[in-house]
Structures are given as C-alpha cells and as structure tokens.
Image 1 (tube, one colour):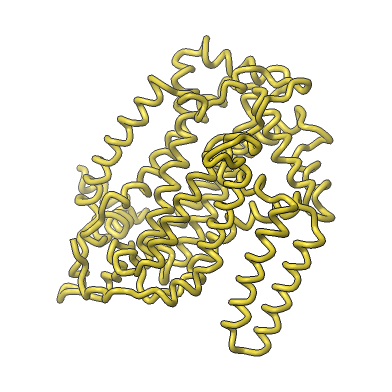
Image 2 (cartoon, rainbow, N blue to C red):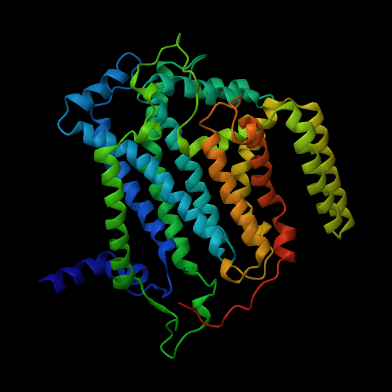
Length: 457
C-alpha cells in the first residue's frame, strides 16, 4: 500500500526525486567536521522562532497601551506562556550565535570563494534580514530599553543626507515612536521570518546543492569521480550526515534548555533589566545599548569621533587608497580609484562624525558581501594558507568579540591600561576594517602550502 501510495504521489509531485537529489543521493565531502553543524542548527532555530512567535502572536496586543501588559499576561496567565516567551527570547540569541559561527566557518575554509559566491551573497542577505527581524522584534515588548533603543536606532537614519529625515519618519509611521510604529514593526516582524527568511533559506540550499558543499580542505570533490559517476571523496548526506546532525542537535538542545530553564535572562545579556519596566518617554535608561548581537556594529558607530576621523580614518584611508592606486595598472581605472580616494579623504574633512559613524556601521556589514572578490589567495582553506591570513583572521575575530563587549559599556569608562573604552573601540575598529581592506594584498603575498589531490581527515 505504501509503495502504491508513493508511486501515486510521484506521478503528481516529484517527492522521490527531491528526496534523492537533496538527501539520499546528494554527495557531500566525507571530511566534514564540527564547524559544519551550524548550518543545520540555524534551520532548527528558525523553526523554533517561527513556531514560538506564532503562539506569542495569538496573545500579543500591538498597542502602546496594552503591549507591555499583554507580555505580562503571556508570562503569568497563559498556560506555558512563560516557556514560549523565554523560548523565543533565548532563540533570538541562539540564532545569532549559530549564524556567527556558521559565517566564521566560511572565513576558515573559504566557503565564499568560487564557485560559491552566490551562496555567500544569499547567506549575507539572510543575515541582514535576520538583523532586521531582531530589530523589529526588539520594540514589541514595549519595555523601557525597547522604546529608547528604537528611538536611537531610528534616529540614525536622520543622519543620511537628503532622504534621512523622510526615511526615519516613514519607519516610525509618525513623528515619534508611537502606536503606528509598534503596529508596523509587529507586522514586519511577523512577515519576514514567516515568508522572507524561509524563502531565502530555500534558495540558499538550492544554490548550495547546485555547486556542492565546501570542505575543510577547500577541494572540489566533483572533480574526482569514480566509474559510477559518484565523487570518490563524497558520501550520501543521508543517512551519514543526518545522523551526525542529530547528534549536534542533541548537544545544542542541552545548552539551549540549560539557558531556557535556569538563566533565560543570562545576567542581562539575553533580556535586559530595563525591559522588565514599561516604556516611559520621561525616563531614559542610564545606558542605551542594543542586545549583544548588535553591539559590535554599535561600537563601530560610537567609535567615529572628529578626532578619530582626522587622526585615525584619514591616514588609514590614505594608505588603503595609495595601495589601490599603486596596484591598478590600467590608467583609466587608476584615475577612477584616485578620484574615489580623494572624494573619501575630502568627505572625512567636510562631513560630520555622526554621518561617518552611520556610514562605517553600514560598511562594516557591506564588506562581508565583497569577500569573494577581496580574497586573492590561490587556496581556499586556512589549512593551506600562510601566517598572514591566519594572523589577520585571528585579529579580526578578537576585534569582533572585543567590539561586542565594549558596545555594552560606557565609552567614557576607564578600561585596560587606564585608557577610556572609546579609545579601545577606535583601535579595534581600525583592526576590523583592516581585515577587509588590506585583504587583496596580504592574501596575494601570503605563502601557501600545496593543496592535496584528495580530501584528508
């Protein structure tokens, strides 16, 4: 009966074909390691967020007079409401943890290199959509930090020349953060993860299965096939890696459950104390900071001061521009690069620090999109790269973590070596951008090792 049912379905829908192409007969490199868990974990957390968000939406009131009380109602009176709410808030941070580790795997093994440029670009669009979803959802509890955080972030759009004020007003739906803002944020927060993110994830997976998965050696397994046409260094994704992913899911759920049941606020990192107080337009929190997953970019925004522009960014961009001009051989392109460099240096003199802060924060994300073309190394995997790339990636990772930590602290507070936090933020901001902007040169000069013909354990 089951065979007949399957045959009946296959005549009308390619169920067996899809199963074979994307699971049973999709050959993946047999040397996948720990770093390859996080793609499947990201899909798991997406499902958790959609389902928990759906149940929360059944009881939530997108109204400035009722929103905070509706969250309290969910926590106190709805059957298992506290669990669903904490599952959603913990899932938000878990989503960014697994996505950041998934992106770091790409930096380790060159997963953004050809022929996977489009996969990387789609993945970065998913990341931006995820950031937008988190920002929109941050306002919904209508706590005091939510309200003032939204005020600060939306006000950044005012700094954009010409269109900034109109764009900020459009985002708010009013002249101030109000009921109209809460309504549209709720609608968009529900729409993006339910419609946009699953569609992007589907396209991401289809693009991945078209060119094949990367591996820790950076070798294309499709180039070495046996007489049967199957990759010599590949094994079917199912059942081998489905079982392996289940083990990864089990370990992840242990950590997720430990946070969920014993420390859902995690000392203010996942849920801030100020968000357990209703929004108050007359009471500003002592420090207005976003949640931890935005703080590296928030630090970059706060790092840009007039002094940093003149004594930090100006010489830094002059060096980058000079190297670019020297490296370009075509005279027409050299003139274009020289003009662009002159325009940036002039802008550092003429434009306000606030505008450059917004530009730098946006650029810190945009540069990830350009990685496939900035990296000029003849090898993909860090296993066969030289000391230059390994040092650069280490410094970048350290700077990202430290920027994230300092983004939660007052910029004027005294920190390590009796220096203000703002100075450390400015130093690590330069390190962050140096990783990307100097990449064409240090990846070209870096000494690499020979890449083996076949994948290694």
